[in-house]
Length: 475
Ligand code: HEM
Image (tube, rainbow, N blue to C red):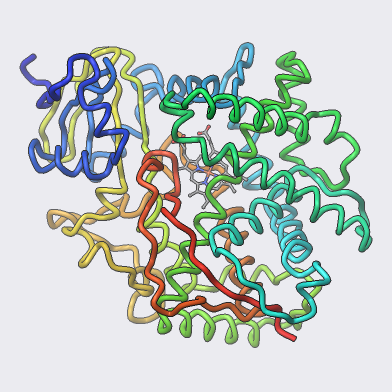
């Protein structure tokens, strides 16, 4: 219809562009952008998806009211399809308001302290590790495992409080089982989301899900100590909704994915970029040393990291923003609820049709946009630093300053609730790795791995293959 964005149906009836879109969304959307500009509509499996790639206009979408652009419909479909979760009278806004309290304001400090203690249990507690021998491992597996296991213990509780060497050993074993089981589901995740599992894979997905439901059932979590207020409040919320214990277990597995699926991969990319960029690594180490010297209390290996140290790391912050710029690729989607006009920042206006879906893909723009970032494919550790060492926040497109220049955490109504906790956790992990470990690539020729292309849209990208490293706890 006149006034609507350019429409591209592809060559296959009904399926439209589904195959190319599923295979490598970034390449497909880049091709469409070159053909149509920064707004167009494509047919994907019978659905019309309008893609908007102008970051100056993103706020219009991300802050639009739910009565026009709904951000829950798609999430509910994924919840059912992947995690078999169906909640009666489910109101995501209500759930979010509760989580905000326990992840952001009131309890952030308690979470951060617990995370540091659990990271130390997982990373430094193993007697075999303490001996100072070199170990070979895949860095992706290592980082993902460390952060997920510590994150699980932080949110879902530990064996005993106060911890003993025996209870901590149990924490390591139990959390390793959770990680290995979770990882099997995580590997099937893109196919689960697209409904393209083979019969054999369907069976494995079912059995892995079943094992996770057992591991995270309310009954098996009940005796755990130091359960986070996030968990307590979420369980109380499910009880209020009248959700059965079986369905509660499923919801807890879904939450394990939502809270732990991105931190490990983010930490992995950060470490890979540091290992491949000696100048960046030296700058981060120098900053850590300087900050530790400046803190009033001495930092003991067993004590918490002073908050001041976590809050004053502009170089590490820039490294984290730059790694996320290059590797965070979530889709931001909205269902169009009513026929409506979408005004863009440059004055153009497009008609959107009820029943269609709207998609933003910040990975292409702003994050990899050559108009905003010079050499957008290249890791530059100081990209988010001003010459005076403060955080750089001014980035431009079309001569106009951008509000959204890096969007790993989403934006607007569905911005990540765990952002601060995740940033602190990743920094703690990097701090422990750099202060307590010798870590090196097994081969200096190792290239930064390519992406597993099936992961576009789901958050952090994962590598196509792991990176071999060797490490030892410093004697
Ligand atoms: C590097 C780590 C992380 C990244 C890059 C990340 C990114 C995101 C993104 C892009 C969204 C929006 C998803 C959407 O479009 O609906 C989101 C939502 C969310 N994240 Fe994170 N996240 C991270 C870690 C965490 C952690 C550690 C927690 C909690 C402990 C957490 C809790 C949540 C919650 C509760 C939501 C809301 C889901 C909703 O919209 O209903 N995230 N995150």
